[in-house]
Amino acid sequence: MIRLLLVALSLCLSSAVLAQSATERAFDAAIAQTEAALPQLGAEAFGVDVKAYRDALSLRRFTSRHWGGEIAVAVVSESKESGSCSRYAAYVRLPPERGAVRLVLCPQFSTPGADDLRRLTILHEMVHVVAGSNECQAMAFAARIEQLATGRFTPVIRYWEANGCAGSGYALP
Ligand SMILES: [Zn+2]
Image (tube, rainbow, N blue to C red; front, side, top):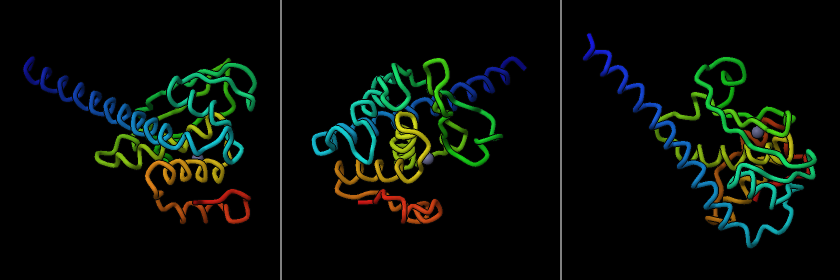
């Protein structure tokens, strides 16, 4: 019995550790692409304050012209697939409350494999963190970072069309 408990406990621990390292890899990869894109990005791209974006991603703290003042980024893992986690891999609770904005990582975020999608998800959600809820803005900015860093971007045309981004004024590379 004790032995079984120990086995169960170690399984729990290892899946938590795996999820943790997948999240860390996603942040590290998103930071690396952003740093690579930075020289060509300018101070602002698609209405996103690039310094605020870089700080939010790397330091999890940024000074915001959009929200006003200093904002902390709280990255939270949600274990239940209910509420917004039934529809998304990750989402941002807006607006910030008491000086903090929450980036919620849902169970779907930790799907085995899917490292590239996790990286893109972080790039995308960080736009919501610093600039608000516009899906077209978030997709255009994330795609530009990918394009500048690697010379190509993840095909998001179905998501682009589903959100009616054609007439949004934002553009994919
Ligand atoms: Zn979004």
